[in-house]
Length: 361
Image (cartoon, rainbow, N blue to C red; front, side, top):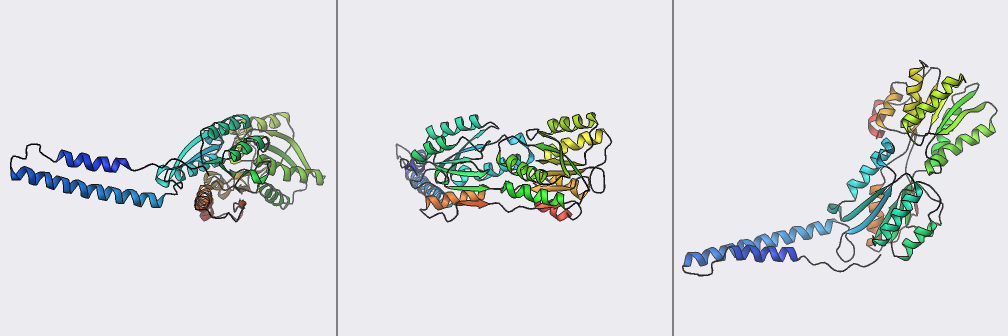
């Protein structure tokens, strides 16, 4: 990491001097005045010592850079309004990367890869210590990550993987999106339908989440004659767009019995279209509804058996990143390059109220 200039705690010394000066008298005409001056000076010295001790204690708590400065991090994320998952993810990052925890954090948001790359280049120019990245797209990052490496900036990926050499980043704290898709598709196969006529609603194309959740379904459809895609379209994680996609299929008169939506918000939009058309959905009903992310309200839909399946995607990566940064700051070797978040899938027939409380985000 780059070394910053040493910053001394001048404020504590200046406060002590100022307090002592306010307690004195220039005439010293009486013993009482002299006594007042001495008492004030003593009180000021005590207060300064306490302040210095408190500052030292706080400094010990924070993972400060080697020279005592706050650690500067540039955090590039997707739009917090993208989904309930992203809102929780952003809140987790903001709660961790604070001045109280030893960080000076700047945030940039976009669902577009080119805008994220521009933000990364700006953070590199600003000479941050670490660049934290949740990429909108898996490709196109080699050049900017090489620039960061040349500038001595540590890159840590979170939430999503990218197509780049792993020597360009320190660590990756991510979900196994391929496994998420496989778990969901295996669950669907286990439902034993005679024929699977699926409305597949995709997330933002090119994102790791979209690729993993789509890939498993595409492979199954290609392998099984009884599995059919009625439509396969992106709603870009958006509820309203998902509703429009499903409404279009309903209007066309094409039959379907599965909604495979790549996040909860899109599943919610799909269900809105079903409800409008009085099409039953959930356990034992006409249409199986599947989502991802495990928002608490979505898991409640499972508990109420209005939906059938929800795949977990764990948004809480900040503590893992903090631990990695502390190790690097202390000169410790990183033993894991990739940390995979622990995740599972939930079935409406087995989910419990405790699961909703424990795993809902």
